[in-house]
Amino acid sequence: MIPLVVPAEIRGADGPFVVRLSPDAIDADDAQLRRTDENTILVTHGRARARLVGSDPGQFAGDVVLLDPDRSIMHRLIRAGSRHNTFLVTERCDQLCVMCSQPPKKTHFDNFDYFEKASLLAPVNAILGFSGGEPTLYKDQLFALLGRVHAARPDLRFHVLTNAQHFTEEDIGFLGSPAGRTVQWGVPLYAAEAALHDNIVGKDGAFDRLLGGLSILCRSAAQVELRTVLTRMNSSVLPELATFITRLVPFAAPWAIMQLERIGFARNRWNELFFDNSVDFGQLGQAIDIARISDIPVLLYNFPLCTVPPAYRALAPATISDWKNKFLTACDGCSLRTSCSGFFEWHSDQAYARLERQ
Image (cartoon, rainbow, N blue to C red; front, side, top):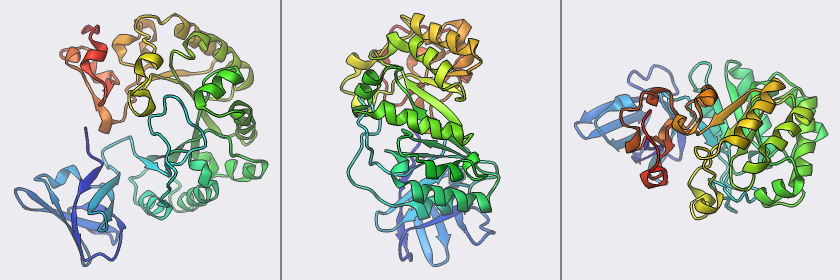
């Protein structure tokens, strides 16, 4: 597992600050990165000095980091060599999904200034994510950040995970603006029937509010990615959900069907929630076929290729973020490994003891 937060002894700084790490430190926002001995890496920026335990400065070169002397950490906000860079806007949420991988908290820390500075220092043409909790609980700050960053860095694109329940008519102006159109909104939809969707997200009325939000996104010509986490609760109704999407949400692209992540609330409810598609792909395959007939692209996120029938494997890209990705011992020697999503770091070999190498 790749660490995103690294212990750091930081001196000479009045408070947290964001810099880009570089061996040369040509730009004013660059901090020089070098090795001082075989076990120490030194980061310098003005009067500030940060010492890290390590022997390879190259692993951090180009990263945009938050150096926090109060917590003695270096937080890697953007890793230069990664396609998976996401800012955690808040841990607050107004839903309580049964399988939530990031259980909500009541506390909130405002890091928008740091995220904005990091975005401005991002690599050219980067795609940056905003996640939570629920980011649009702080919609005004989020929109303002996206607008300012777009004005300075029109090359950047964004992906925002949201339950889409907080959009209003007044938001259409931003959502349809040049800055708003740089965003793809990842919106969860778990069933075509309100009671089941509301039960999964733990919030009465969520389905109806979600449909209102999707309507506003549609009228704004916003980019929408629908997301459906596969569980035992909704596995049998996926064909009905596919039909619902083709009729009422045909502007969404893609529809991402996601395998369950064994962390957060799902960790202790795994046997209750996990649906093993390697045993039964029937309803899932039917749902995919319904959507594709209507020209709605479907992707399978977090599905190891050996759990997907060959006819559908082209829909299952390697999507698990590299910092939390691993392969099991059963994957050794597999011919599909280089194109496979693999598994989350917190999955065990025992959970997938049946898998065979391809």
